[in-house]
Length: 255
Image 1 (cartoon, helix red, strand yellow):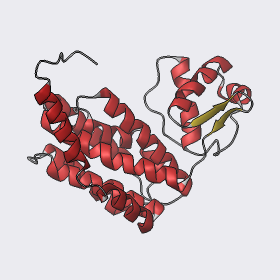
Image 2: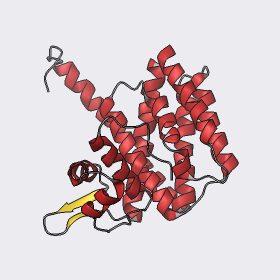
Image 3: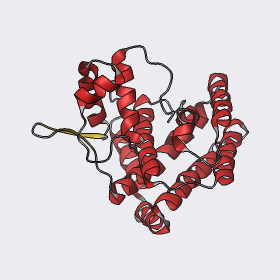
Image 4: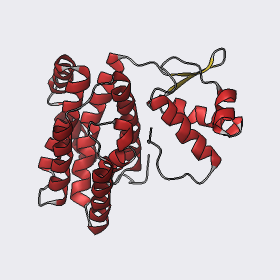
């Protein structure tokens, strides 16, 4: 299964990516204890970089660390995945809109390259692992000018979790429809769109994955949760506007 990105510069990085791959693809099953010594022997690495990777992957929510039970692969639940997709629907359109406002020639070159790479590995029927890392890079390239590494890192972590769920659920998207969705995202992003259409398309793209993997009931639940308080963003902005009005000389470097 091809999911790892370009060769890492250190053995620690390689160990982390290889262990991440084993979790995402189901090579290590949900709830399974991570056999560090056995994996080190199989992968021809020292146990030390694998143990270092445990902490990183636990931070990403892929592992659970316990003093008594060691490291175990995080379980999956429909509720958790609903939350993951809901957060993606909240954060990715926001990152896209920011990126569209800041796009430049460097951004365009990265998006063009990412789209070409994705086309080269596209498979029929779709095999999610065969599309990686080109698929993730394509989506990250679209958001790359959002101006926030924290936002990009968070969207990457959520994308990994949703990829894991898609693989383990064994649900497959319609090949042509999925391809056309990505093509539509690409064309809207590099075209004259002000960002509105690409945001709509991105939300629909994520929503279609929810529909396929989790069913219409979960998608309806997410939509209901997102629309239950439609004025939340407006109220938050109102509060921030009042704060700025009351504190016109606030030091921008303060935290």
